[in-house]
Image (tube, rainbow, N blue to C red; front, side):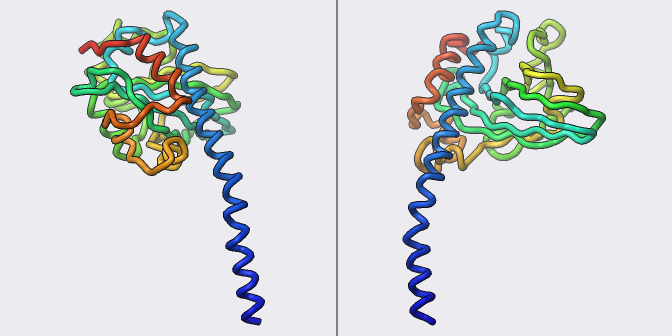
Length: 236
């Protein structure tokens, strides 16, 4: 009996690596696709002149892109998405845009909602306080004084000094019909597992975006090059 158990265990341990390898490869490819899609979505949105106000983009310390966030609801709604965040390098976020950390968006909202959609979101992180909070842990998005949500094309700076009243500004591009609120009640956080897939080792999100020692991975080149081209200098 003991020999049989030993034989079975040996077989299991021998087979596990062959089973996990395809799964790892699939996850790696999926995370690379998310990173590529983040660059594609950002370029498409920024190519529309009135989508995101240039003056706010120039003042942002970091930019988060969530391509195709899925939301489905009947009375109780929820949201789920994966994307990437790039921050400006150098002291006081004054330099070029750096390697991105993978990000996760999760959460739900309550209210009368019927429908479903996939929506692209771009979040502007307007100051170091907002950037530090996101890189450290989960951040909840809401309608309080520290977070503002605005639709694409609305020039918030024309109505108020958005950089003083909000740490995070969100813009969306809908691909369907949905009745309900957008990201309020959801949380965003660094996706450590996806970062390990992209960079091949465990690296803290803050080290990825701020150390200037992490090379920009190939799937992120469009994301970073688009930011460098469209907002090359930080304006206070």
